[in-house]
Length: 440
Image (cartoon, rainbow, N blue to C red):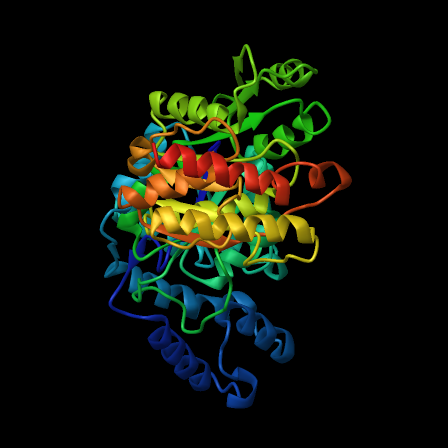
């Protein structure tokens, strides 16, 4: 993937400390009570920084004076802080791969710089944005931190990854369209309340981030294409939002139209078959090329426009996280309202035939949206040239012990895409080809 910028949260993501935020909140409350501020005005101090602003506005007490109490507590906490295992290695790994690094934190600049200098990682960041650097109404979970970072680097949001441990990190990431990674298991440094937000990818602790980023940075997309001049440009534009040109492999499968010309104009890798070999031949060529180029993960994506890029990211998720070897995007587990009945019926028949050979039932064996890790992709022996390859890949993966999961997706059906893929007649042909091939 074309990752150019990674933006980190600090507390709970990269560092922890014995003093948690519940203790800071309680000690701040006591200090405010000592100053004679009514407990009704203090409330539950969630969130602390904004509450101090509200107290200042209502009492007329100088905000900087009130703010100094919180800053002192943050620095006291920072004195006992520690780096989570894997933090330094991750930052150095990303920098070695030419990726810009930024920090967005709700901590004060004084406490942030103290912490980074203490752990000797300040020089690893290209930009640091604290709560002091944005208007208070724009502090996380609002968009101010992240927007300032994106504006500074002028890097597209789709080529940016936000790494955090809290919904406050994910909300701006989602609003501005960046990818996100959530650290789920770190307790030290986590805020005293939770926000339910979903990330693109999850890891238990920061030390699992390096293998995750290695997979992300070495994900290739295989796009089989036969006479797809009507849709190939749009499909490639979607993919180029997230992937490098060198990572997108279009297999021009003997097309008679302008498919090859359009794909080459977009600058992606184009491999051409002199004659039409069918979907199986195209996928075989594309997967083999991706593996030769060092792919850790291979995503297959149809050229007819029926797949959504947001679904591709969902299908990638369990493979990128290292939870499975092979993920299939299932239209039958998602929204099937647009899926023509004849396609559903044809797919269902093929699902049962596939299951008979694979020993595993997959609800949408004919889906063209798949994601495989290197280990699983390397074990595939593709012999079916045409549509039967979709079943064959599942059979091969199951036979070789690949862990398989399904991810609900929604296919986009137009008059054009309805003519593509499987129907009842095509399903019979596929079933016949599959049975003949597997009984040889």
